[in-house]
Image (cartoon, rainbow over the protein chains, first blue to last red):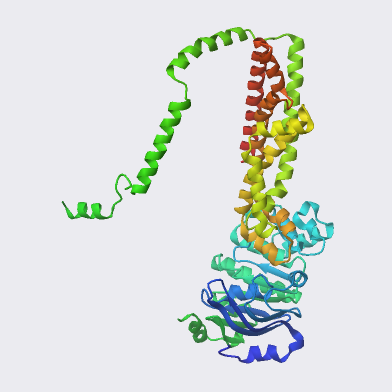
Length: 265
Length: 270
């Protein structure tokens, strides 16, 4: 059930041909029965940058994972890239969806003992023949070059040979962004990408995300606890409260009072 | 009693943990088991005083060790065979351990709930002693080094399979989730995230397995599974104690050298 459906949501819903993601009364409960998502309806258009905000436990991360079938849905349906599924997508559908997605986690999720370049090459692992992307040493030249280019785009060309565990938090997150970008996905999902970074590195990472996604026409959905990030680096802010959409507005229309309300019990 | 002392009595833990009647009974039962076992099977002072002169006599007959060049050459060849059994057995065992450990590692296995079958298989390989495996393989493929190599393979799978699986279960889950999110297959995740993460632990385990294999391959010959042990058995059977002394010294040196090499490798990798 959606508390406030206003301009942004109405705009997305009015152009169904542009919808990249649609959820229909999406519900998600975990083993103990409590609903984490309680009837979420939303539509995200191709090329949009959407910030998901909400308190801890509001269902932001769960929603992201449900969109690509990482978590099974309890009720309702999701349509991602036009592939509609209930419960869990079939293996082939799952592969088709995830092949077009770049995912960035809060703690970067890099393989610590591999070089930055190998980690970025691994962004191709979901592709057909992707097994050659396990390490840069055996990757096809074209993939290796694209990975290096992605590292260059995030300003870390000089760190291509450095092991992931030797990078700072901000650098590691930029490598994770390069990994998400290397095969130019249609959608990048980022779960609190700046949460483990200091404020300066956080802004740097978010600005980079926004710029690269915009330049490449990639749809971006990210979660954040930082209101500044949510407003500054998105076109649209969706607030979740108690598993429901509390509001869904253009970023420029979101006022401080509305944000405070989201985090109030 | 001051207020501070009273509070200490109330809140601070006692010097000795209090025991429940059940725990007390268990400790008494365990102590009784140890004492009864020592009473039944450990050497008595009388047996020791009888045995020591015989041992001294045996050591005397071993001296000096045989240094005949023909015999030393034969021992060298047998040592080379022992090494080959250990190296071939460990290499094949480590390679086979990898897929079995993957299938047995909970939370990582592609075998779902059937991971326990592979865990049980590893336990079977590990819990049956290597000499029993050697007897089985000697019966199956005949006397010689092949039976020894097969024994080391099985023993290595039992050892490495367990530790590889545990390392995989404890491996960093975030990179695995990150790769799963972009559609990587389980196989890609194994080679892309799990193996790079657990590689130091796997190399360490493999080096221990090699050390263990060298020690095992020395004694496998006692039951006819090839290597220097076979020569040692012949020496004892024919009362050629000076030959036996040379072989024991050679075994001592080879095991020591092996441990030194693996220690150096471990230090380098660490």
